[in-house]
Image 1 (spheres, rainbow, N blue to C red):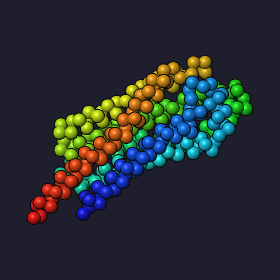
Image 2 (image 1 turned 120 degrees about the horizontal axis):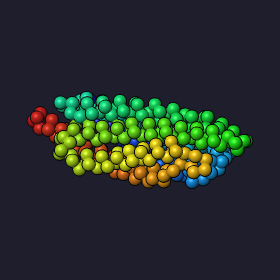
Image 3 (image 1 turned 60 degrees about the vertical axis):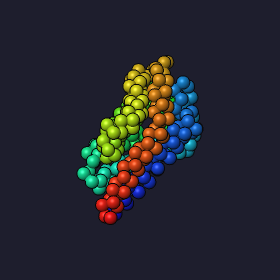
Image 4 (image 1 turned 180 degrees about the vertical axis):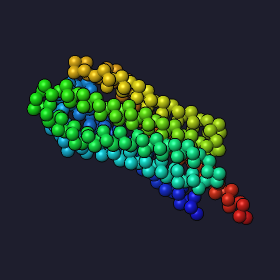
Length: 253
């Protein structure tokens, strides 16, 4: 049955996203932190990146996989809901796929620059401390691409995922708790967007990134809530899918 096959692919995509979205923040803290620590001097961040290019590039791999997992999950959701009777939630899922595609572009462009040009810029800063201003400007540009442009679109993706799953599982009102929880998760990321935008547009060598600690707090909250959200995503879908399967079997008897 096509719906059953696509449901299994969707669950596989969901499990992959769940694991990778745990791994990526862990890599941020466990590997990338010295090169991203805005509380340290620009020169110290650049020196770590220049001195550890292999670790720096490795640390970005889970984030590249994270984007791929979001895309896989969005595609799998569209394919599954296209087979659900009445195609409930399909329009929301299509919107989520469009938002995911739009988010991946600035996100992956920035991360490609992180593993290539950022290393060269860091080495130039170590060789000539006067280059620190240019390194800060480049760093801020990448944060704007990932933390503002891409995260805004990923949050939109998340709101649309929430609506699609709820609509396909009995409606938004029936799944009010799930919709409310999803809204909190994605609003946390939008909070990070607001403070990230302020920080990167006011960054200076002397003052660093003002209020970036608030950005980090919102991101920490968002990623902490993302795991239970993805679990809830799967449970809501499973309940509706099993109900449809039971209904289909009853109709054949």
